[in-house]
Image (cartoon, rainbow, N blue to C red; front, side, top):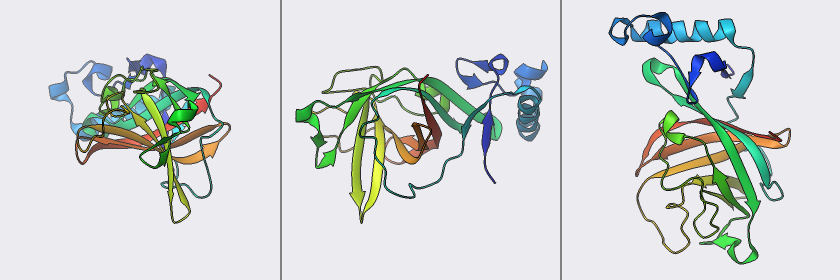
Amino acid sequence: MESRLVIRRALTFAGVVIVGGACSGRSDADVVPGEAAAAAETAALDVIDTVVCTQPAPELAGPGSLVGMAGSYALTMVGAAAYGSIATAEGTLALIEQIPELLEMNSVRTPLYGATDIDVAAVGALPVGDLSSDDAQAPGVLVMESSAENVPRIRLRFGSEANRRDLVRFDGGFTVLTVTEFANGGFSGIWRSGVQGTSSDGFFCARSGT
């Protein structure tokens, strides 16, 4: 069954859906986890009028690339929050054509780089440096494209420390968005974050022209 995230500004603070006792006037100690999740969902469905992001396909079904897709996007990241409810973060993603001498990194194509102002911590992800850096040598966002057995793999790696050209990292934190769908001039997919293994994950949508 398709998952749907709906959001209304009155129910959000700093890009995160507010759930639990704060919405009902009761203290957090009085809220039963299952009840809080149900109440949050009911409240959202009662007042929400905008579909922000839908669950994408788990894998890219055919050929695809972000080559030629430099520009500005409205980015939404969705992850788990307290009591099994949904948390979201929203921001702007700017992608820039890569300079010629930096089109490859460790045998992986890097056609675009850029920056974002999204608060990844709001969905439990790690920033891994400055996400707003527009330095091509250590950008806040780096697009990485490769393929295995003719299956494309398109990733956006977040964090200036993770994307440094002068340092090869073998461990440390990571936040990576993997593209699994293209539609209406934008793209969507799944994300994961952690320090060695994945400790948080979710999905995202990048909508063009806003």
